[in-house]
Length: 223
Ligand SMILES: N[C@@H](CCC(=O)N[C@@H](CS)C(=O)NCC(=O)O)C(=O)O
Image (cartoon, rainbow, N blue to C red; front, side, top):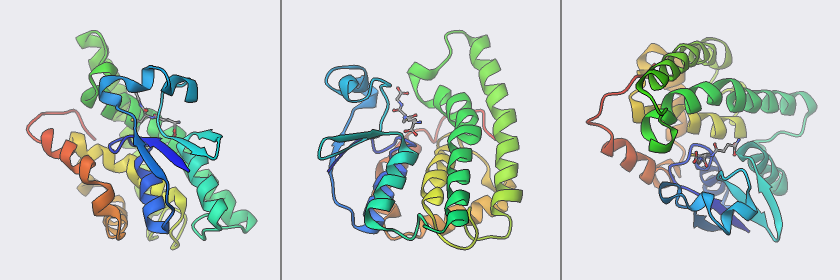
């Protein structure tokens, strides 16, 4: 099995963290997003969307981080993707929410345009409007995550760890690069701390932390 990924990518980090936690081994091949390797052959043949991650399981090619997490969890029968109908439906619901409602605004309208040069809008006005839009909607999504989805629970689907936590926490902690103030969202902060206590977190997030440190001196628009 082979995973094409990048260690700082929001959508790759949950996969490598889950694999490390569950002892799933695979060849890890870095696709250098910084030099545009994902826009060139041979990667574009693998994923014409020009995005990581991509899983290759003996020739079976799978894109989409949520689908890859479900595939891996199902393959090893992991309790983090429960089989019971309604428990599984809740996990799917949370993953869809993170991947659409949350990531669309927080990733593509707030974090990426500020940390990836090729996501920056071509005019100052375009950048300003995008970030204003992203900040307003990301704030609303973060409140929903804090008040409704996590609330007094330990995780995003109740008190049991699921693959939705792996997906969600990687997206939410991307906000560390732009200095999101998580003190405004104490339940989210508590959940992040819980997830950071996973035994593989530190090792799997070294490059994430390196990027965060390299951006520490810059000013950003954040939630
Ligand atoms: N829906 C896809 C989204 C994948 C995605 O956004 N990948 C980003 C991770 S940083 C990427 O490859 N970006 C490259 C770029 O924007 O040029 C998934 O969940 O796998």
